Image (cartoon, rainbow, N blue to C red; front, top):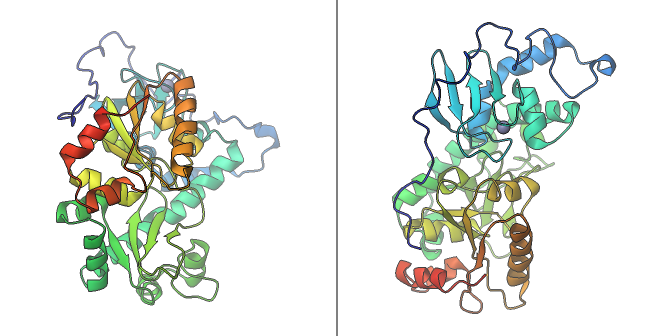
Length: 370
Ligand SMILES: [Zn+2]
């Protein structure tokens, strides 16, 4: 293997002609009617007001939600319709159709279709009412988190202690800082900024950005925006090193870039991700801890690719144990897995910080064992 030079994504240039005409009218047989609700719920027992559902759907355009969950259109059709790989089944050529005007999708592979609520049900594998809750949370947190990330990015270059810490952890390139949208939470200033923008303290408290006492929850932390969360690494050894907002840590970090490679390197921390990406390994992804949630595991299984697990070589063996357990589960799903053995006591970050280079890491990849 080598450092992958180019994307291996399969793009379909042809194949459209044999497909039936799509969306000939508002009522497509596959998409269901806009009058009926194509959800899993027994509608007779549901008391959710139709207007409430329409409002929610209005506020969360399907295309935006899909893209926020790593979906990428592979090719355009006419009138705001797109084809891409189906995020709901193991898709090898684009069979997932999205109509961005009608906010509806349909998959010619697995035969499923509907609106953003139906998509959330299928994608997160939850019932109707839980899908509504997830969408409401997403609607509430999405724009707010973007504001927060933007604010923390502005702070980064104003605080020497943050720049010094990044340097110490091997983060040297501005390109990487931009790529990961790295910011700094000094503490004591987020609340004021966000209230100026009209966010109430109760919203911020609910999102986990303020403590119960009303102080900034992230203090002296390097922050990395995640899909629907915010990771903060403490500069101070006295504070707990890792902090997330309440809720899921989301999918694999950087998966939208890594997934197109035939070989991906899986690491457990964002600082591991950072040094590898900086060294030219753009096929790297990160699980934010050694335990993968169901969504992350599913992402790794969503195509045939070699997975190189490069977890920490912990003195107590916990990283290695986690890597072995994960490898076994991946192998059961038919995914080829390789264990990358780092020198004792090292993680990919310390390997590079202490002088390792891309060529040496490449040798570790080549020496990886099943
Ligand atoms: Zn499908």
